[in-house]
Image (cartoon, rainbow, N blue to C red):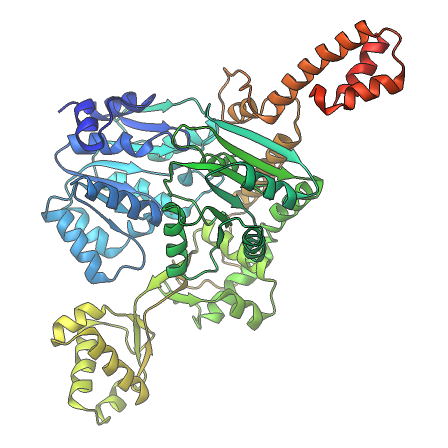
Length: 616
């Protein structure tokens, strides 16, 4: 089948969107491709069509678990076999998925980047018949980008192991970031082509309003613009308060942020996608990977960190091509606040090194040990123990992640862990019930280091070995814990820190000062670009964004707040000049009355235009 026939058979579309067919053709020719398409530009079609035209497996690397689940479900509904592996799955679940991918007929395997380096994935890599590698959110591999993620660097190592064409996709990449993506993913002897779509979204109206009363503006927009919407707010508590305010005003709204448990977030996201909730008030934790086509407005009540973040978040509106609005409310205080936040995101390096040591103390990890440890982490508890500022500690940990010392994974489902408390000699003297003794013997046969620290165990594997169910296993583990034979830490969803190397001594922690300086400078530069964007009321909003992303050929969109203002001013100038010519003796009061009369529908600068005309 041709690409068009595949598109028609599985998706029911008669034709591709702009650039999709060029990207697919380049991939089918065996070339590596960097595809830059705006949010809502149909990136998934670009790799799913050539993936179906190849006989073997397409490996898709993406950090967005919500996107994985959505795309796997969508493919399965079309009769295409797809699966995903990500943090939080049990070893048994991972082995089933990888086994099917290796020996079954799975066509698409979605993998989170942190899984690439695991022992289990590596053990299957040699038997996975991979025909194409796809890197979604490819800007995450670039340290020059706004959302660099260290685990993405493992994709470069994967390319050394798998000889297959690669397709990298992103919606938010400046020319500098595009260059860096290619350099990090290119392999000798294989051609790499970059294909960029225009960033225009003709159906999306960018409206920026400088205002003091954000609440009034927000209510006005929610009432006037029909359909589904998103309201982005930086602060979690304010999200909850704003959702309550909207509901009190008769607007169907809910809130979403990373502080909610996984089940609640999942249900609220589902209710919004299905239209049972009209407006979602949220932090930027919401929306990544969510493909809801009929979002009519996206409203930002706080300044985003960068034009990249704004473009991606605003781009969640109007994916169905219908008229939609991206509204940003701001004032001068927001500009100062954004700069302060960017400064705070980079505490002094000496302070970051101190946090490194405190993390190991918190986890009870001595010097020269700890590599591979999985630490359940509570930021509030950590800060209380060491009397630290919550935000500064958070940013220090995030930088330690960027510097390659750890992985900081929020809201992660982790396995049950067990540690044997008595030493071996004392253990033999403990009198246990037969079932407990058999479980303890099985544990010692299956896992090493049980006497040293809590070790992850696979409950399903133990149940299979012992011929019992999960509830019975957990009851036995609990009984052993009551007898002080084991330390039993049940499976849970929480924040986890993965320690990537043994604990270093003070003065030996490489914090990469050059990287720190560059990231700090880039963060501040992006913040300035964001404030320049909102404060520039002379240039079309769309043109400003296009120029930022390196698109040189542009023209005014005619529908943003700047273009509308210019149109209004032009019409007003014509009306004012006509009035003055027909009323040559009009005094100041008459002119002011004409300019302020609502029936004339003049722009707010009518009086100033009248004065200019009189001066001439």
